[in-house]
Length: 351
Image (cartoon, rainbow, N blue to C red):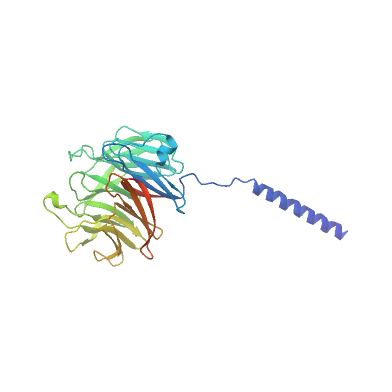
């Protein structure tokens, strides 16, 4: 009798295991979309003619795809592809000279929508809270009084408000339900950070001349300022400005010893990285002394650090294909290089 019970128990267990295994086998296996898990490079394209494009490079470096928006949709993005931002699964591609934003699925790059009204010389896109997007606009570059930030309702992809700001609004960064706008100056030069809450400017912060890039670390906003160029009349040196985001006040300003014009601030852990005079420098946020430590040589158009690597684009002659170089920041050695489209101006991580 015990033998019969034991045999019955084994049979039932086997049946249960087979049934569960069968159910597991029938579970759908997730397959990444064509342009997921990789690096996206926005290429501005030829100035005043032709179209910009987007290059995709997979994280394992095995796949490189050029002009992916055209490949998927059969149409060009337009001139010039200035930048791109993300909100959930959507990519918002800012096309400057065409005065529009193309909306696509960020993983498949299938076209979803477009924003073609209410934009005048749009520059950069930043999303916040899943429902709002912000777009910097120069307006007429020769008129310093018509610059604004457009607020986009991301549920409808329609502009819901315009926020008048100082001239030359460029890159933005969002933090704790506020948007920080760097006023590089457009065709001129400016020295402001606008702080936007909702649909209005809450305050402005005066920084160094020509703020061109920003990062947030430990509730501090680090703003790299390029300084006034020589052609502006009175040349000024660049600086690095640290803003305490709790108070909204400048806590420290670090000046370059000589008249130098840095750009492309990015961050890797506790290290700030930026480009200056054909070199990349590293500065630790715990002890800032400029210019810092030289780690890589090269004239780069854009820099972005991610996961211990530095991604650096080279626009070459600004008329032919550019390049993307990847460096291991533990050794500061180049580990990969890839061809991009014309004038690779933006680097984004699509994971």
